[in-house]
Image 1 (cartoon, one colour):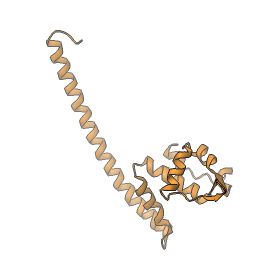
Image 2 (image 1 turned 180 degrees about the vertical axis):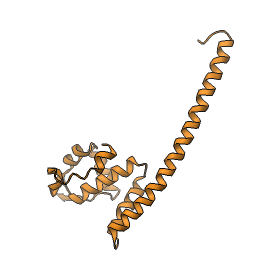
Image 3 (image 1 turned 90 degrees about the vertical axis):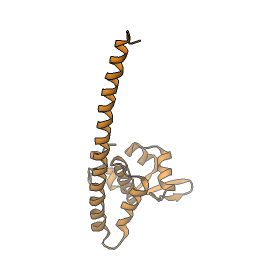
Image 4 (image 1 turned 30 degrees about the vertical axis):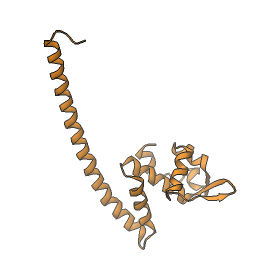
Length: 144
């Protein structure tokens, strides 16, 4: 699922109106495996209700999953995603969460831009080195 799809606030969809979701529902909707959902539960990111052996996820879990997947696309670790999400439960949580998220997003963008610069430098060095080695090989009589 793309960031654009995750950010879409589709409040009129039938999925958004439902109060409960089974593990398969979320798996299909978000394109993640059942194993991934269970892993997120183990990490404390989701907390479905149990009815026998069936996991029943709430709208809150669905939104948390959406935020976890968005954080993952943005390059955050699951620990960082959990920290961002958990701010919501503090006093003035929604406002604080948005402020913290904006700050962390700006920091992460800078990190990713630096990584992109480093990758571009590596690619440039790879092109130069490849051309150099290819020229050396040609001078020696062929490129086997």
